[in-house]
Length: 362
Image (cartoon, rainbow, N blue to C red):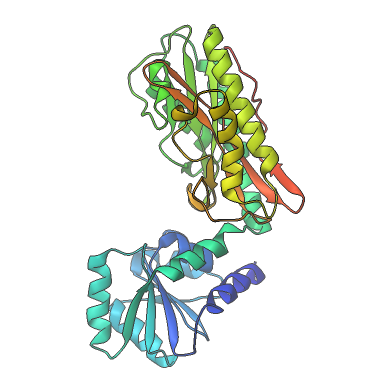
């Protein structure tokens, strides 16, 4: 385990331009990635010679036990103690993450630290580099993502037994989340989507008191978190029966999803993976009804690098975990989305989803 975190920290330290620079991380997710301690509400200082996690009394004992290769400090005066550690390491310039700190908080840090003769910079390039480092998963991360997926799938399959006319959307969401936790999830990866009928045309519809009816589609977009890592899957099922139009749209989405899968391999441009799915849907005449990207990275966050979209400049690398989730959404009628989560391998991909993609009619 030490080797894993040593490698992560080394990759971060390699971004330092000189020995008098240091990084200040404020994102709980990034701190967790580099230290082993998630959700600290702390601040991490990374210098050329050491990394230090500053937490308050509430988190100190837990951080001491969880952190790997990182000195833990229980602070009383955060800025003063951060400055002392930086000065001890010969640091003059502090680079902060730009997208993971509010302007108000950054300005407060900057005011106090500049009064102590430090230079402070909010560095968006640092954010991009960290995202790039995190986008390629190691074996421990892949194991956790696969476990999260297994938990979510087992819960989903059991939840299907309760899909019947008269059940409310929010009841399906509650049961699915309960079962995921019962099977070992910390919580759901995001607010679960369990929507039915005309609401399935909403890509991010919110479960409510609407009830399932015979002839409806039901969309399940769901994921679990296991030891900090997320899973993400979508399946669309029909209740009782499906019209020919519903079956036709479903088949188009499935073909698009399979086309994107075939395009996934190391070196492939993410925009080309998106394009493989989009071409199928556009050729079938439904291009205007596919308004989101075809996928995204998954890991400690449910949406992270790389983006699998028409404008993405990212290129796939072995070890990246991405989703493949094209959809067609017909306003005031119905929608279909099919989503797998896959790991890019040296010679293609490994699909972490073991669920059928054929249309299930319950």
